[in-house]
Image (cartoon, rainbow, N blue to C red; front, side, top):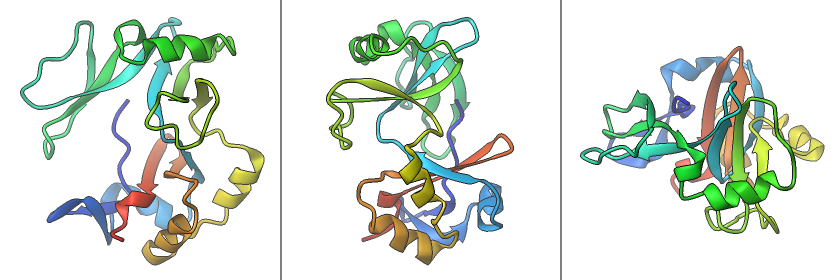
Length: 185
């Protein structure tokens, strides 16, 4: 999985926040293209075409990758490498196994692992679950369809919805993201 570009460029003096400047690879969002979906606050997993499960893993500069790690992309700015490790050796293996007891997932793709032991469980799930990326309840899909496509409008829209971590737009194989915390307070 490649890192999804953030809709607006990061502030070089404060990398935690964005500036009102569109990332060059994301102009299509501002142009009204793409479908906005919910960005879940969990951890990314993937079921490959061979039926094997993987966990997303970032390797920091100067650190060795875990065994059987498959690198996907290196970020020259941060020095981090993003890739996949077999779910069985991941710190999330137990929670992932619990989620699979609820549903027999056979469709290859990427899924967000959510639940009580993942990122503080901001959505208050009672057990660990896997959510297909791009999926959200109908009422939330309707709400995301109302999201504006400009810096000030998106800032106001996201800050008014603390229940969402952010938005991911999908268009013709491309994605762009924006998190509520990307905006300075």
